[in-house]
Amino acid sequence: MAQADANEIVRKSMALADQNMAAAFEFAEKLIHTGHPIEVVQLQQQYLVRQMQALPSQTQELNRVGQKLWVSISISFPLLSTKD
Image 1 (cartoon, rainbow, N blue to C red):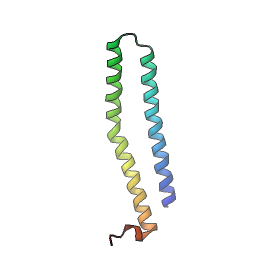
Image 2: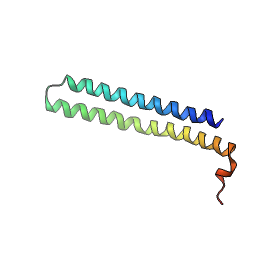
Image 3: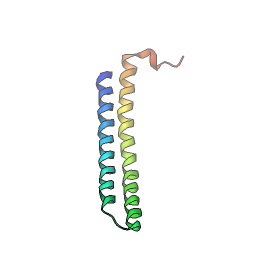
Image 4: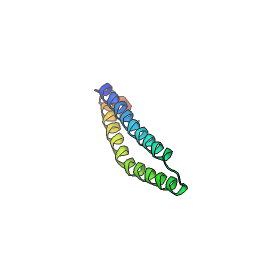
């Protein structure tokens, strides 16, 4: 069970990294086609706002998967969860 949960956190991390890379490439594509410094600043602001809006849900999802992994590890290896 712990192995499956560890695999899940790896898959989720890779999926989120893929989303973030896609957003970065989209930003770069738009940046290439801009011609005015004001547009550059506007594009950068839009990109940063979108990334900051995505951050809480990405963090919550990784936290959820991480907690699930910790529970699996605690069940599989009970000595790791003691506070002696």
